[in-house]
Image (cartoon, rainbow, N blue to C red; front, side, top):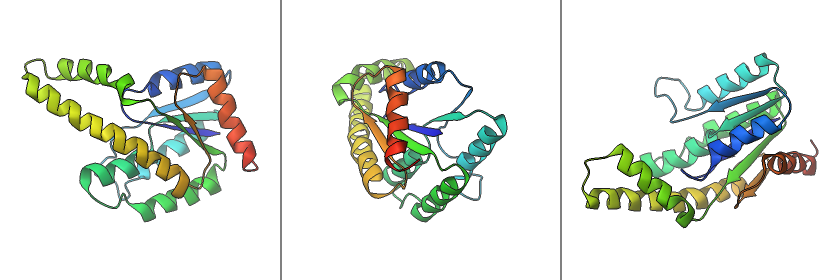
Length: 189
């Protein structure tokens, strides 16, 4: 099973993933993804590469910390393009053929939950910045948080061929894993 964890910045995705990997009680392949490399033929190639590495590892479970939903959404938001929609569909067809058992897991939080963490991060990242700069960066992150959360739900409803689970509060890792397995059962996996 491949679990693809998505959500806005500073909502607890990495913490949840670490806890899920520990709670799984099986060998788990975990991969964190940031922005797609600009030197590959296809924007989604590095996700394919990680799926191939996971399959070669023999681990029955893989958890991706951010992946193609993030690239698809943020390409549209940050770079003002179509998010490489056709390439995304090709990737999902390939995943369906190669993996089959794929489930999306969204970790969503209200902005007020994340905002203090963003302020802390901004002050660490820009220690000499003026208050107006921190404020402007915080507002940009607030807007991205809202857009990303809304677009992620649209992605689950209208784009992906795989089931999704949405968490809007803190869940124990075991419960999150159970919800992912149940989502797969609902679609016949």
